[in-house]
Image (cartoon, rainbow, N blue to C red):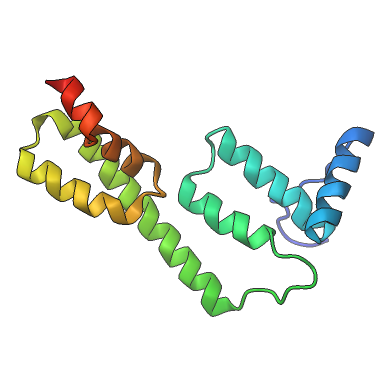
Length: 140
């Protein structure tokens, strides 16, 4: 017997789910495991259980077709570092959102300028909406 294997799932798809994953596999040139994991990643993200940064890393990882060379460890480490940075930035901008109404105009402009570089993050997009001309007019 092997060691801990609690991270494994055995899935039994009904006919429709199985055929849908086979079509996904064929259209994207994915292996069987990657097609199921990609579906899982997409679902967890759309349901809000997987943050944007991790979603991007896993989506890219499980979208690699069989005919494509796998990512090297250095590239994977770079992606993980970027995902960690994105998580920290997203948390920072969540705090900025909570304090938005108490911030000075100069501070708001600073955060808006920095936010332009990270539009792919959820809370950054919300900060940018608050700083948009339409939103500013609505607050007056």
